[in-house]
Length: 497
Image (cartoon, rainbow, N blue to C red):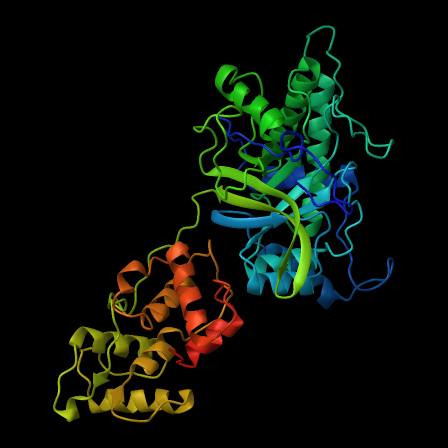
């Protein structure tokens, strides 16, 4: 599931391993109060985890202002990946900020896998991975997938990687016949991962992923000890307030977890979310039923559907694996209202004329104009659907600064500037929220009558929104990416149709 410094060729069934089922009860999955905080404090102390200091050399005290700013950034961080349906990538070394920014603007990806912990990971040193890097990506809208690659299955031939990193203990306790040593290793690895996550500002409630590389499914001791390890990993993450995720190949780790889910549901504690390595080239979360059934981990899956390869976006080239995510509730947008319930979404946005022209414009669309201008602080009159002299003044006050003809009328270009007005976050497939609705309404005002019905202001950036963005970019001669980036927002807010 990672992109190594020198890419290791691996078969699809032995390449990436992350998997997690959802147990019947998650003791502290959503509880991050005193108990979880106290437990986390003990883990941090035991693991020796400390806050990463950026900027001054080690041993140099940071200023109180800098320390407070870093602490606030961590407090403000959102749970990740949260609710999301869309594209992601993973790469061994966390990319530099400049690369992340270019890929945010031009790539289809909105999620990124990062290796935060584990003695067996290829990229032990992560010079770019700091609390500031984490908080910056989250603030910009990236969904993070924090990965740990520690002890691997005892029958995995490539491990230990360095000789000093241990593998999962396959021995059974003489008195109970259980793999208690492997279980304890899983608990300890969860403690280390939480310590690393907390130091980076990855908050409780987020999913931490364990990378269990492919192994021989038919080796009973190897398989069962690996399952015991993952059980310990999951139980300890729950105790510390984090969500458990597991990455593994479809033919080994995922197959084993799914068999336990169906045939031995009480034997092990299963992960909450799974990350399936299945290089079938299909950007979805389905897996061949030969490996696992379709009814497990609904809305709790990630699939790595393409292995290591180079991609270039925004003139930045990175070697990545491709993933598709469908986790939580998926990408959803909460309902919105304007001016106490005034409709602002229509199938078309025609030119409106002032009442003084002797013609009557559609009252509902005049109300929408009044409402939207009011929200921009330009209009303070009644929302009555009358294009009055007072509304003309507000219209003129908007037209001048936006390089529109100052006149007692509201043009299609003016609609576009108003519908797109506001912040300009980068939006792409999987984005959701009020900004997406604003984008969809703005795009709808530029579309011909034949295509309007296909685009609805749902607040979720879906394939139809992607197509509308691409059509707009093509029409204006912009870089065609399907991403509502800085360049696209600038064109919309300039009223370019």
